[in-house]
Image (cartoon, rainbow, N blue to C red; front, top):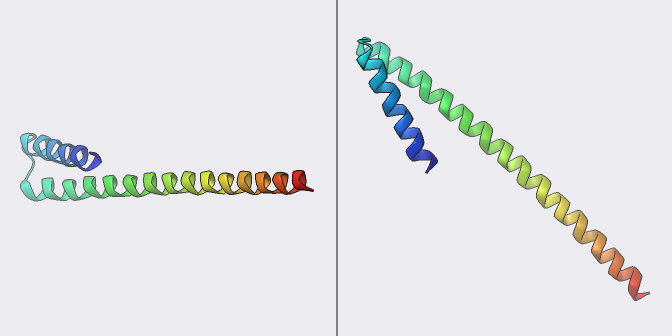
Length: 76
């Protein structure tokens, strides 16, 4: 779904540039810049998402370890 939104945004931006009577070469360069910005934003979002997953997994491991210790303690 994100890719469809990205493609729509790119196409819309390109049409806007061409209707502004910009030279095709300039429009192409601006589109490359725009696409680069989108790619960088995607990478940043993926990194943030990955960091959240790591934090969540780490918390789960800690909670699991605490439960195991508590069980062990209760068995004694």
